[in-house]
Amino acid sequence: MSRADAAEFIKKYFDAFPDLRKYVDELIVSARAKGYAETMYGRRRELSELYSNVAQVRAAGERMAINMPIQGTQADIVKRAMINLDADLLHECDDEARMLLQVHDE
Image (tube, rainbow, N blue to C red; front, top):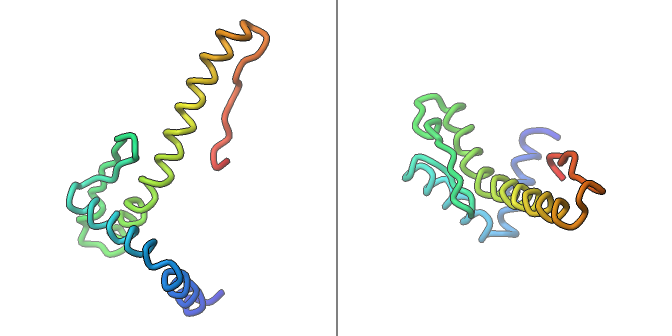
């Protein structure tokens, strides 16, 4: 896909979902004002990249400001579930079952 085609695809996507465009823009504005992005559970990621004079670095910071609240919240939920599952297995199953691992990007 060419850059022009990709740009047109993204434009059409946000035209179809204007509230999503607003949400994404608000995430960037909020992170720039605070200096960090935050998950729903309050975990923070500092984003000094948002203040860079280098456009590529600043754009990377903006992508992190968008991804952190969404992907970070998902990670928080999975971590809480793993902690709860481990406790439940220990309480209910003794040594009959145990959690071995969790695969990222489930």
